[in-house]
Every structure is written in structure tokens, then in C-alpha cells.
Image 1: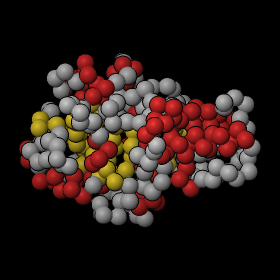
Image 2: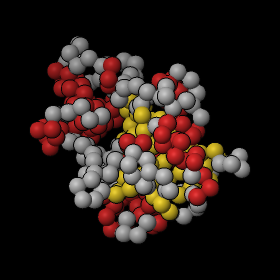
Image 3: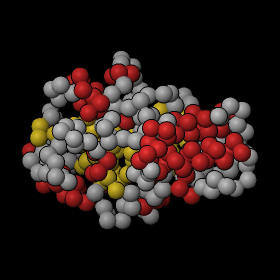
Image 4: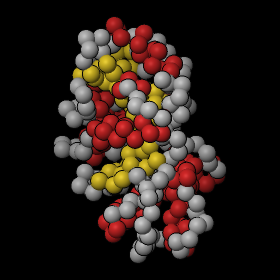
Amino acid sequence: MTAGVGISPSPPTSIAGSDCHKSGGRSRRRLLIAAVSAVCFVTGVANVGRASELQNALWQVVSGFCVRGQQATGNPFPCQSVDLEKGFAILGVGGAHFLLIPTIQIAGIESPNLLAPGAPNYWEYAWEARTRLDQAAGGRLSRDQVGLAVNSAQARTQGQLHIHIGCVRPEARAALQASVAQVGDTWSRLPIRIAGHRYRIMRMAGDGLGAANPFKLLADGIPAARTDMASQTLVVVGAKFRDGKNGFYLLADHSRNGFAASGENLLEYKCGTSR
């Protein structure tokens, strides 16, 4: 479908603002249609009956359009950027909502490749990309306003790993601020429910995420998580601790009894109410 696609220069933009029917050729239109389909599924605006058909749309867009464009012309459209060396793309999907997507095929949080020695720390790259939210939000965001999330296999619609980058919902920020004294360096239960759920939580120090991979902290720190990673959802929220040091909160939950764990529910993509 995407072999030999030529990409004419155009400024990076979000898919939400693209027009599939503008000039550029039949192959280009097909890819843009696939891109829009991927965004519809990632953001929950979808025809459920076509879910299985389109679950690879996001991968097709990144591998067949963004990466090829970066390699051929230096233009990763419709992605905002592609880092060929580190192996990830950043894709805007409307508003203050971006996705980090690996440029190699990885199904999701359950992939053993994410826990392998020397595995890329995609969370680190996603955190570094958070500055893209500033323009969308109309001003610079503080670190505790920014969150990253990966949904469980049961809650996702795409068969390619993607980390959601957005703003933390006000009620989630309030719960974290109210629980500061009860959160330590190892996993425990958050004493306050967020969106009806008591997440597991831990804190970690540092300006960035280069020192520790949240996927590994989840797999190694929560009993049975490593053997059932597909059911896990993981959220990383920037923090400024009471001692003035920078760090992060990690929150986790898991699917069970028909409940599909979606840490993305702690994020919002307008960012106006999270200030």
C-alpha cells in the first residue's frame, strides 16, 4: 500500500488539521485516510465494527508515511518529527494531544522487547517532547501539569505502542497534591480514588526519565505485573516535591472483571482547565 510513496514538502501539522482530499496523488490520499482513521481510533471516535480492520492504521502511517518522508525528504508529515537514530515519531492528533510512537513494530505494553536489556526508554523521549504542549496550550506548562500514559491491551484500539502526551486532569492533580505525604519510593495504593479507581503509585526523583524506565519499574515492582503486562496501564506525571526537587509520580492499574484499564483517563487535551 505504501511502497514508493512520494512526499512533497509541506509543513508538519497535526492530522486533525489535514485534508485527505487535497492534491498529492491517490497513494497520498490513502495514507492520509489511514492517518485520520488511526486518530479516530486512538481518540475514541470510531466505528466499532471496523476496529479489527483498522487496528494497524497507526503503524501504517508511521512506517509508511512519517519514516519514509523523513528518510526521503526530511519531511515527516503528517508527524511532527521522526528521530531515526532513537527510533520514535511524534504525532499530533489535535489540541494538546501528542503521541510518541516507536518506529519499529511493537504491539503494546505487553511486548517483552520493552523489558529487554538496553531497550529504548520511550518514556524519556515522550517526556522530552512535552514542550510541544506549550504552544497548543497557549503558554508554558509546569511539569506537574504534564502527564504521559499507556493504556492496557484491553483499552487500546491500535496494535502499535503509543504513549499519550497531554495535560493532567485537575481532579487527578488535586488527588496527587492531597496524597503527597503517603507516596513513597516503592509502590503502594493511592489513598484517594481518581475517576473511581485506586491506582497504585510510587514516586521517583529526577529532572528527566533517563535514569529509570517506567515499564521496568512496573514489571519489577508490582506483584504479578510482569506475567500479565497486557492488562496493565501506566501513567507518568511530572512533579515538584515539597523539598523543591523535581521528580515524577508513576501510577498503575490493571484490567479485571470486564474493566479495561485506561490510564489515559487521567489526561485531558485542552489544558485550559489544568492551569
